[in-house]
Amino acid sequence: MVSVTPWAKDTFGTLADQLAEKIAAGLLEAHDRARHGHEGVHTQTLEAYGHGLHAAQYETLAARLAPLEGAVARRLQGRTVMVIGGNVIYPIRYAKKDVPVTAARLRKAAGFRADLIRRHGPEPMQQTLDLGLEELDEHHVHPDLALLPPELRLIIVAYACSMQQGVMRAEWGSAELRSEDRYLIWHHHEPLLPPADPRAA
Image (cartoon, rainbow, N blue to C red; front, side):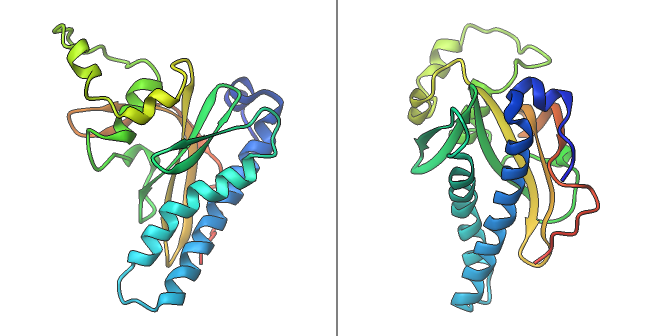
């Protein structure tokens, strides 16, 4: 396990070490569960793995983080996400191959994930032109976001993972969403797993 940095300690305080360890272990467990699910149904496609990993990532993180001091569970879109010290911990599998986290982008520029990043991510590095459309945008925000207090900060747990290779990269940090191409613009990111850690299937 990598040592936590000043950023992690500033963000999570004394829980930083435990949190980094539990999140990394949760992602590895989610992969194992998804792989076993795929093996159980014997399909030629990877649908069982992909759907299983999507569900398992929330469940394993919730189970591992719930015992931490001050942890609060929130149900969003039928999934449980954890809030630790004013931070929403949100997992995103950004790739199925070993590429840098700076290549991460969302599939859609709208919807829950995009709204979550816009609402609870960091202030954009480059301000958009104010055309007085803010009120109009408010009506299109995903309703589940009303379940989160506005002051919460989003910590994205971004990871690259495939059934064959397992979790190849896992990083956490804060990012904004560039709407024109759906790329995440990282304000800060750092590894949760050692770079050479071959956590394969």
